[in-house]
Image (cartoon, rainbow, N blue to C red; front, side):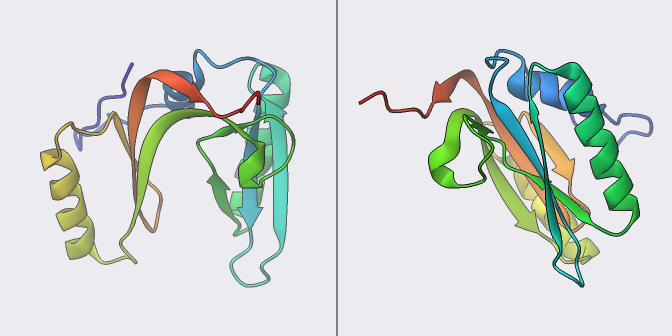
Length: 150
């Protein structure tokens, strides 16, 4: 599944479309973390929800939206977690490959980055404007489990 990207007016996929494409087949008991960091105080707040808990997920996104309105940057790692830990060893599922392109509010740099993403083969499944740059995602046909049973 992919999310079409276009600069056409009105073509702004909803957050739920992106999350469904990214996590639609993920086990309900894995965690997503929304990390909210204030740019001047460096105060960080982590908001957690199991991907299958719609009520908790809605609450986490509402809280993140409120913190964003208070000046916090909102971040997430595409890998779902087996526990409420932001450490790499808690990563449980890889649903996509991704790249973060920082453009630092430079419109020429952003245009060049977008042009290169459109020309890339295979093209990204989704391109998200992060505010300070672009995030490109290549959704995998099947998510890769990262838990080593051994």
